[in-house]
Length: 356
View 1 (cartoon, rainbow, N blue to C red):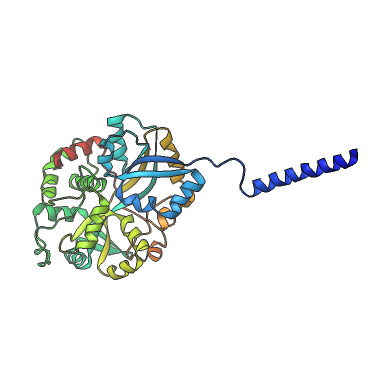
View 2 (tube, rainbow, N blue to C red):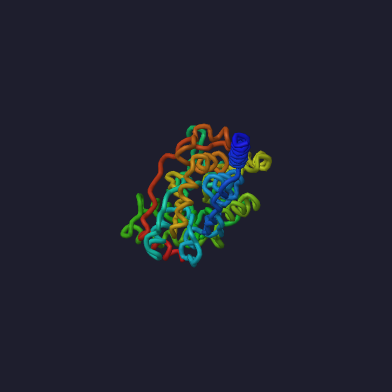
């Protein structure tokens, strides 16, 4: 009887162990850690990336994170109320300097990826610039002489004088508001460099501020977001916005997400690299300890690969050699050359004040 009881007891124990093992193998046990929701402000050109289901799945599954954000210009977000915000995701390091001036040092910051400032135009406009010797083709890519373009804008040269009588008014590059948005701010900084004949500083910029004002006064209404400007460029056609300054990744993302639409536009819309150009460094700013978790998540190798392949941001883990083939975007540079540094924040403050 005793032996029989021991056998029954052993069988029960084995059954309990078996049930426990099965429970663990089938996903039982302790509940997974709850996802943390980080709240912040994001530049409009990055919303496509953050709304990508693949990116969201990596953040949720591997990092237990969701990002809740509102769209804002790079400079607007720094000046906005930071209450309840864990992070900012602007498009330049100058935005970080601006943040430090207003709020002090952030908990942590890191560059996530980069994209150059470029020009987008229409083929008839490019052909007029080529005929004037202001644009040139090298190694399958188009480049714009920024000193020559600035001289045209400063002189008030009309589109008709450039050989485009169908376009109204003076030659101008549409951009975002440099006081509110980074792409416009970078274009203003690039023009200041060109007018100064090198990287503008607090002393040299003083002499060119009136010339910058002359150029920007001709632009009229300026969008507050680079994504809004790019959308308007695509929708309104050559007559409304003959040429704009924006980010390289915007066209690459559009082509990747809308291949049929791009197939209809690619004989007209042209990517042109300013000579020189400037890098837009998209920097993540953690405003509190919770926000730091977003840095590791966005630097994840898979996220970085998706940032290039689907959204056109240049990252350390992505290759750009076959970019034209991958995105089906002609004239895409494999390497960005002839890059100049942006003026420092103190110099940009003077530029912003002059353009306000």
